[in-house]
Image 1 (cartoon, one colour):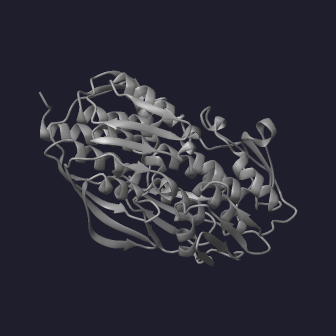
Image 2 (spheres, helix red, strand yellow):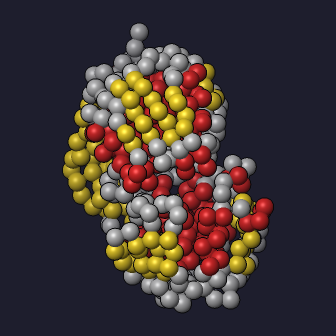
Image 3 (cartoon, one colour):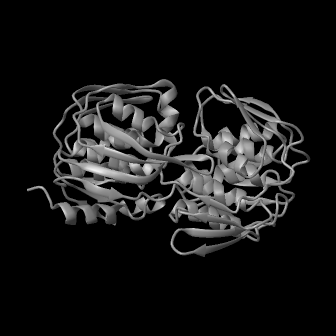
Length: 435
């Protein structure tokens, strides 16, 4: 689908972004391992999370939809999954594949996980290698580097001490989920703290999780105690596109409601504020173990900055739209340490450089990041999403703030934010187009 985005005069009012993708995945997986019903509210009913739902159903878990964003999950207990009759399909979802690999590695049956062409190109050895050290039996394509993955019953899963070479919430979560079935504690040390939704969700279900510095420890789990209700906060990664748009479009004043502000995810707020953005965190509250707030943002002049080191895992998914913000900032922005972006749904460093160049931007692509001098004028162009939802939305923000854009394969936004272009259309109708 080609989507045309016209310039927006200003961005005002309120937007309720969809439920957090990371939390939605984890809530269904752990609820499927509990033995009493769990009601999930504000679940992200987008393609990636629905892949998780489909896989859990294939494993014998009952999942009923209640309205547009509600689920009731009836698990069969920690050891109650059933052998699937066919191959499990994770679609485009790396979270589904990697986290479910950890769960399936502890099961007494054979299973196979695959995904679409994009997911089958994404690296899986980073998960398989440490799981193998725990005693899990997993084989993949090309010497266990890629999916499909065949997962055999293990003779026994052992708790390990593992130093992660790269901070990755998906790898950490896979090891923690396998660690539920281990014979001793699982200890994982990260070089930097990655998002901690798995740790918080495990605690919600009664597991014993402790953190000391950069090390998280999980004790073996006998059973999961289901909470009666999980309220999924709005996704800060979805909110990031609106934070940037409202900052760089003059005259904007926007409130984003019910957004998760977990400190392992708020790097985008920290960096935009450092660049001069006017963002207020209001009405702070909690949804279970997760902090939630409204984000109030107004247009502001930005200046360039350096983005590197320990903040990278806290905003890794937001770097494409951060690159758009940098084009409107005064001075140089340097992003480094983000080589993980080369193995996402697309090579995001290459894709953002290539596609924004079509709009007239000059961006220097480095092996692990980007160098952007601003401000730079952007012209209208026909761009390609590369089948990557975050690329499509970042390009849309550039078009809204400049001269418009046409985006090929724009329907990939359904992976994480199905209503994105509808929300744009509603605000264009309310605010009018720039002449």
